[in-house]
View (tube, rainbow, N blue to C red):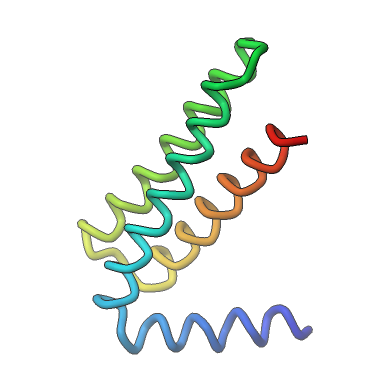
Length: 97
């Protein structure tokens, strides 16, 4: 129950000042996505799975940026931010191990 409470509190705060938070989030999320793409491209083993992961990292980053530019509802933008950052971080960790 606690994670949902934290999620709702952060979502309310994101809605309160969406313009400012979205601007900061674009910068941070794009940097994390770039690092994930770099780790995929620097991998010694280039397989189709790596290219699919690169595609997914790119699409998720672009989806969030597009959602901000299209001024979608706060919850959709926030969920895309969480999804994009989480996926990028997982890709980075998987490539470092």
